[in-house]
Image 1 (tube, rainbow, N blue to C red):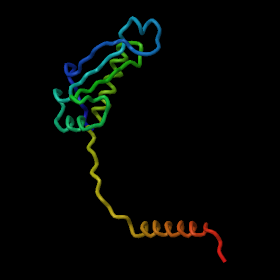
Image 2 (image 1 turned 60 degrees about the horizontal axis):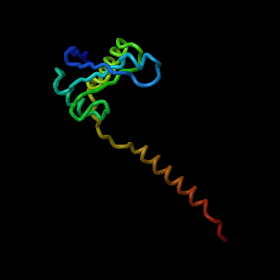
Image 3 (image 1 turned 120 degrees about the vertical axis):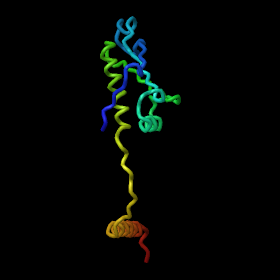
Image 4 (image 1 turned 120 degrees about the horizontal axis):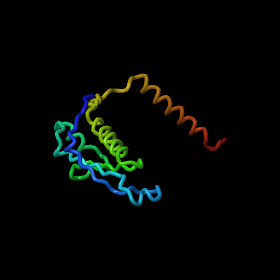
Length: 133
């Protein structure tokens, strides 16, 4: 896994008020942060950009912008670290090479076990019927 380095000017931050409980602190302090990272305008290699855009992730908009809302902590600094950590996890997930699946055939023994199980099950079901003369 390669180590990704993202320049600070590619990440856009905006402070917003956090949702949920927290009393007066929530009402008057903008501790939550929106992290915005434009995939197409970034300095990432093209293969990583393609993999990111192909992900089915709700945090990636149709325009190719990753939006992460960090509001877990009461301080802006901790929320900034949390948002960056979540972005890095997302970016590092596309650096791993996907393994190519090779089609294989089932073994003869596994085929035999499958058919034997089916015939046994069929016998059990046929014995459930009414008893005739």
